[in-house]
Amino acid sequence: CRAETFSRGAPRRRLGERVGRRERERDDANAPRRRASAPTMPTLQQRLADSSDARVRKEAMRALAEFLRDDLDELAMKKLWRSIFFAMWLADMAPVQDELARRVAKTLHRFSTAGAAKRWLAIFADTLAKEWPRLDKYRLDKYYSLARYVVAEALAWASAKGWADDAVAAC
Image (cartoon, rainbow, N blue to C red; front, top):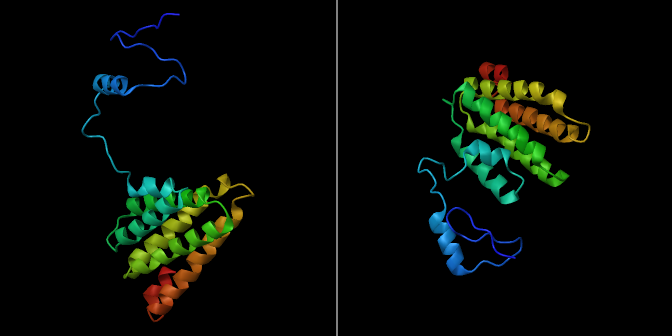
C-alpha cells in the first residue's frame, strides 16, 4: 500500500503511526502561523466559568477578589456573576461547592461603598432569578447554599458598617 500525499508532498500517516523528529519539524514549518492578535491568556470570566480544576478555580477566585472595586460598572458585574454561576454549576462534590460558595460570598467585603455593594447583591439576585428555571433537582442544593452564604455575608457586611442606614438598605 502506497502512502497518499497531500498537496505539499508530506506523506499521510495512519492512525497510531509514530512520527519522527524530522517529520514533526517539517510539519511545524508547514503549519499555518497563528495571528498575533489571538489572546494567549484566558480572561477572568473564562477562568471562572471553566473552573472544574481546583487550582484554576482558586487562582480565578483570587484574581476576582483583586479585580473587584467600587467603581466597577454594571455590565462587568453581570458578566462576573454569570461566570460565577457557571463556576458553581461545574463544582462537583459538596466540599468543593461549599468552599466556592463561601469564597464567592466573601467577595462582598471588597466593596467599601453601599452603592457598589447594593449593585453587586442586586445583580446576584437578578442572575440567580434568570438562571433558576434552568436548574435541575441535582443542582438546587449548591445554589441554595450559595444564596445562604451571600445573605449571611451581606448581613455581616452591614454589621461591619455599624448597621448604617445605607448599609442596611444595600442588603
